[in-house]
Image 1 (cartoon, helix red, strand yellow):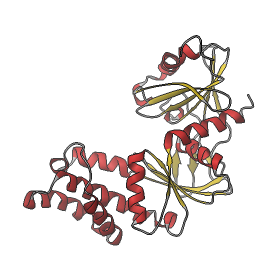
Image 2 (cartoon, one colour; image 1 turned 90 degrees about the horizontal axis):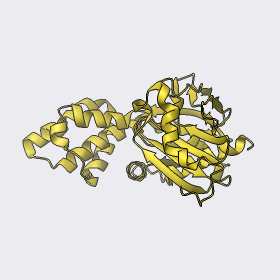
Image 3 (cartoon, helix red, strand yellow; image 1 turned 90 degrees about the vertical axis):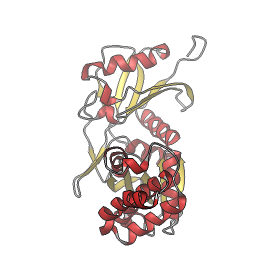
Image 4 (cartoon, rainbow, N blue to C red; image 1 turned 60 degrees about the horizontal axis):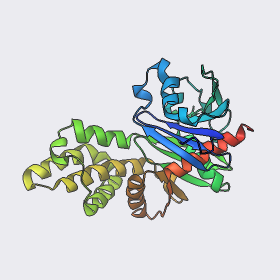
Length: 302
């Protein structure tokens, strides 16, 4: 940001495990400037969070005590400071945890995650995206699916998160494609064969108990018939996503479903759900996250 530009009214921060994104914002939610890096929570020492944040936002600090609203793993036990979970059923954003800072130019706040004590589960970061979605859809009653490394399925009713369920589908794909015998057939990057992807989803939903053997067949088919890497990757992705859909059936069957995730993942989940007769709506994750952070800023009464 140059000196001739307006200084922000507040700063939005999405600080995950692997990445940090910051935005200089007006009170109305307009983006003045943005910055990003791979200095995620997992790479920052406990006593370096404030210094790391300031290295990304210092040019924006022209007003005293500028509010900073952060979501994500920065509020985890291993983060800057632990922002205690709030129990569902509850609104996605409630009490905001204030963090003491050495630098008086900022007033630091972290959004707490949510916890589920029955059928134990937790989320941290996704609650902000849910709040952002409800900003535009306050009467929504249905299911929000937030695809990612750890995908969340959340039941929303009367403006509250009623229940949710987490699936490690993305992490399992990464582990199996890089650390198992399947890595020899999957390769690095590349597209997915859509026919193989759809077939694997259908096979897994109908017979989830056969997943262990279907996974090895990816390697066996490659060795015997020389399968293309795009087919092998599609089979692995479809098997894991089919397993998730089989377990999440109570969440999507007969429900209104909205997808909030990266475009590529939204597209995969949309394909999978359409095959089950569910037509989800798709929403941009960054835009939704900023709307959630903006709602949190406005709740401070600045």
